[in-house]
Length: 148
Image (cartoon, rainbow, N blue to C red; front, side, top):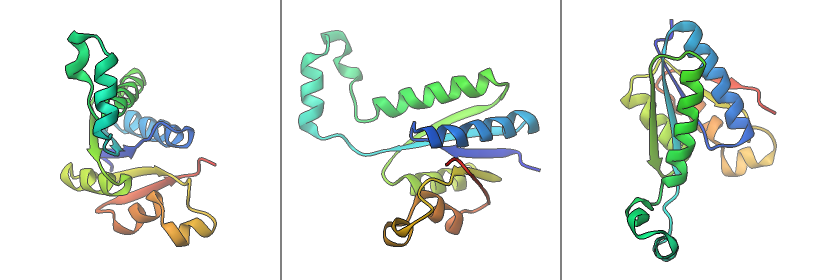
């Protein structure tokens, strides 16, 4: 059925609900799980400021996507702890929906799991939303988890 499942996360409670559903599915089906998170670039002044206060031997490690890497590692640990044998993580710069769609295509995923946050109200029509964009442009099936 589903051999490769992708879930996006931004660390929010609703994204965590979608992650838990994807983990349950992947563990139950013996599927590979891909976890993706998008990040915006961090300004050079902020990076310089953080490097200036970091210990000298750790300054090289401060980069624009440290927070995302930490988030993805926690999600990986949660998935493997729940019995998912194969977990890969992907940090992508830019729009969250584009990151999800790109990784789903690159990894030939059979299912994308996203939360429903942002799919109701006027904002959906004015700004669009991650689940809305993913559901309309996905290269595979999409499961929209009711998280709110």
